[in-house]
Length: 386
Image (cartoon, rainbow, N blue to C red; front, side, top):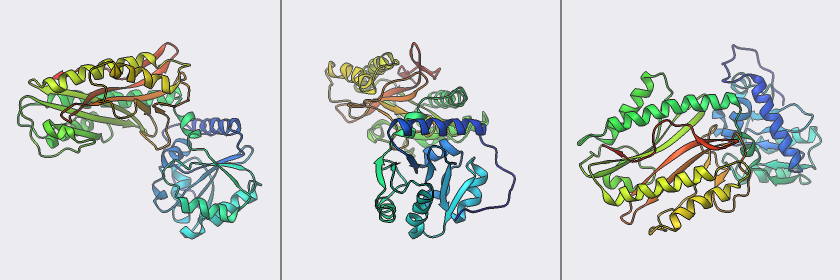
């Protein structure tokens, strides 16, 4: 049922309501271009991007935002969360369901009411927060519904940033740069990974930034762990160090990978030189009109002609901003057919594997301009020598 709730003081949205309405309209344009009649958005990051609501209540079950031409944006959510959905976001048409088993019926009722029960409707089948059982339940209620995978529609819209979004990302990057500088200055023999991570968090906190996401931090042999979390392990002379870190502003993230060596470590030093060359080739290739696969290929070409062709074991990068890395976001990888556009933002982490198993490299978060990709960071991606 459509739920009415009393008004309470609304939490401030990070952007004007008109910004969210513009995003919804661009998604509707993309829906029409894809030959769809509507879309059900369920990925939490995409929901926040389109409505301002955090999506935290969606742990219970899907909270689809239904967008269709000529119809008001409609949220189908758990009744327990209705007040938060209405007051934290900008979508005011809210339909509630109480128990998880009711999701399919209530969502189907909304689609049926709007004449979408036998139309082509996009679902984010390749994203988190939509289980196969949810899709089965909806299809059981609406056997004539034509379900189409629309996992990348919101992502394709969200990767092109407005000036308001770019301002938030630049502010976030200023804090990430501070985190990197603090990381570099904290490196000395005997310091622990936890101590360095705490120094980074404290520096950003004192500067007024949001809590830092330390994705990975490792010293020495612990640098062989993908996404290794800070431990009490101490740094010794002649060891490599790598951090992946990102700060936020209004849910917009700006990420960096930076590496250092205390003393000398030839195995990772030469690896880093290759990562730098590959990263710079990728940045140079990221121009409007290129496909994402062509940008990825420019990086792989550098690695392939080296004497270490098996060091690169992942994609070249992915769209970043809001959210940081939602499943279904656009990727710089082979066979990605999407075209680079002005205003797109990507994180390009070139992390390579050495023969001894170390992970080492560097990255940039870039914004695409008419002339090409420009890094948002003001810290160098060259190897830092502590």
